[in-house]
Image (cartoon, rainbow, N blue to C red):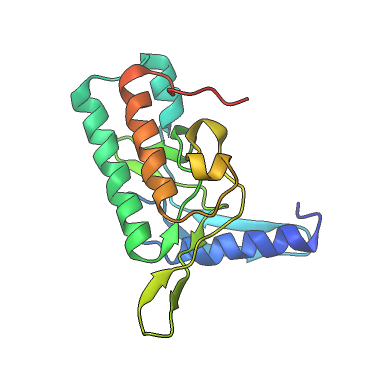
Length: 175
């Protein structure tokens, strides 16, 4: 149940972003419905579980299996970045695995668009973001230090993910 208008606004923003994302490694959102109390999301069914469950069960993967999951994640994140978005909460809990071991990125609640600006000379550059968000173990130093950031946050998180896929735990603990 959406308690505040701000929650509804943030959820609607997430829905609008998610509906634009059509890629084999991203959970597909088909539609949404809304009544006075709830917003209902109709999304692709991903049968198995999230990657966090598998990592904890296995204690890490062989390099071959880690590579398979990692390259699928990179493919989805590349698609996001190419289409002007930053995920900002990449972690195993937001990576679902279907019955064919196909990985699907989900949870776009912290996703934002990469705002491009043009300077007076006509050069395009990316405007930096400053919202503090994400999961501590996966946060890039600029986020932890509350500095401006861009899509490189996701690249940092990919490195943390690769480490966790192989070693069974993240290299850093969040406090």
